[in-house]
Image (cartoon, rainbow over all chains, first blue to last red; front, side, top):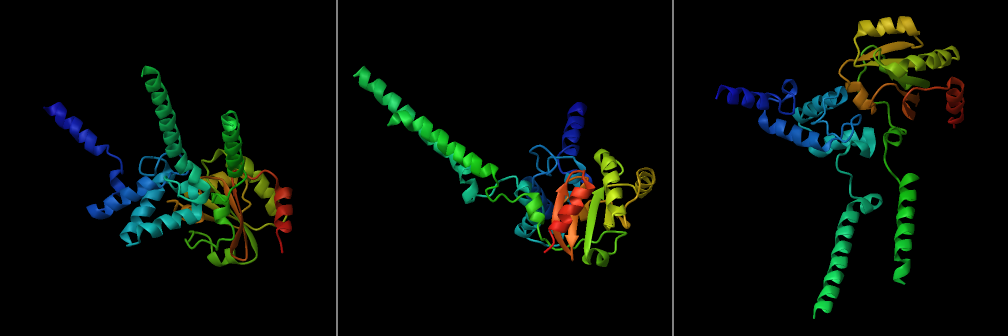
Length: 129
Length: 162
């Protein structure tokens, strides 16, 4: 039982969003976390600032919280960072003409695979009959 | 007809990749900086008005930054040739910054401090060293990584004049 409590405590204590920078208001903190998950840590390999413990990410988390506290909108905060770091700072690339391939390719591949499968099944059925 | 399908797909993919590789309108950190106004965040130790006049370089560095050591010689050379350079120590202890400058040379007109990275983010800096070239309070050029060629950089500064 004691071990369980210690383990549970550890789990809570080591949860992301390192305690010293958390906002007192849970709603604001939730917003900051949600935003942080959409902001790419520009010096890490594919991590959001919420997941990274790099200095840079910690600085950005603090900045996001400061802006949330100041009442800035999500859009304004994202725009602030995008104006400075470009698209690299976004975890989800924007849907635009130059990224349509990126977004469309999986759907197209899936559709193509479906077509191929349908053909194969049809052929197999034809042979069976 | 179907025989040429793989070839068609290949050509299409190649065209898309070439387009993406040659820019394709991607907004990266360097062109995000292009012609941006002097960032608003105050830098402790640097007078904002000094950055708004004429041509000036702003160099983000740190005493813990390895490639900054090599770059310092380049900056010293540029300062000797009359370029006004302001240094901003990023995530650094002022004591260590001073010791580092004593050791590797100080080409800076003034040294600012950015202990929490607030100025760095406002400038769009992701690591050190990074260098900005400003003319009359606008960012003309943003280099990520250590500068290596003082004369070449100065020549480009002059060429960018209109």
